[in-house]
Amino acid sequence: MWPDIENPPGEVQLSTELTHTAPQVQLSDGNRVVTNAKGYRMTKATHGVTSGTWYYEVTLLNDQGAVRLGWSQISGDLQGPCGMDHYSYSFRNQPATRFHNSCGHSYGQSYHQGDVLGVLISLPSLTEEQYWDLRRRRFVLHRDQRYTAFDYTPKLPADGHMPVVPHGNIAYFLNGECLGTAYDKLYLGKYYPAISCYMGAQVRVNFGPDFHCPPPTTWQGESVNAMSTCPAENYIQEESDRPLDEPPR
Image (cartoon, rainbow, N blue to C red; front, side, top):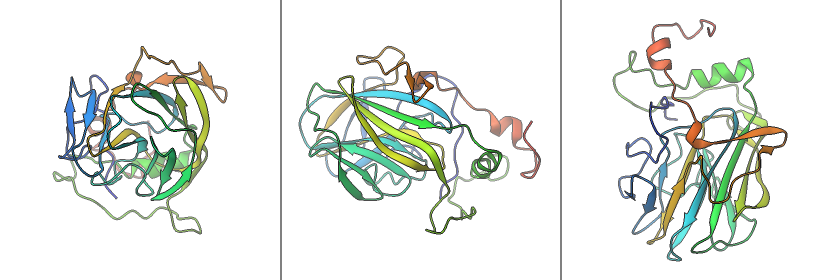
């Protein structure tokens, strides 16, 4: 597992950092347009979320290749499609298929050039135990100048995977019409908007706040937030000198 990285100050956009985007991915137009010439590779946004309900949209610019749209933790493999491992969840354009941990299931309907896909994630407020779990996954520059993977040993459930957030879910919207819940019982983690393109597919991402197809005002009783409003974090500066076992302020 790779350590989580703080959300930087500034605009939410697709990241050019090698921690977030495969070098084969081509970004243009202010990092809003994505394409990739050959096999699936992934790009993630600069900002991720651990709680709340968040939304972004993607417009398909051509009908070449294939696209997978969704959410990924920082550990989701960049050298493959979103949904390839248990760190990421995605929805492919055609045939319409949702993917998680390389397992595909029919979902929704195919989307094509000109269609707008809304991508929503809903994560409940963290319990104290979940807060500490995620805090221990953070990268703190003060302690380790090199960004390297680390062994992760949370309290594992019986199936041997990461802890599950029972009420977390992901849903998609096609041209403003809800396709229903694609995933629930998500793995605990910090999730970034994630896009994978294959064989020349090209898309444009919009993190808001002005959407072509606005999301519902609420989702399951919670306010829906544009990803553009996702805040920066400053735990590297504020918490790097605090022992891991010290309670949060």
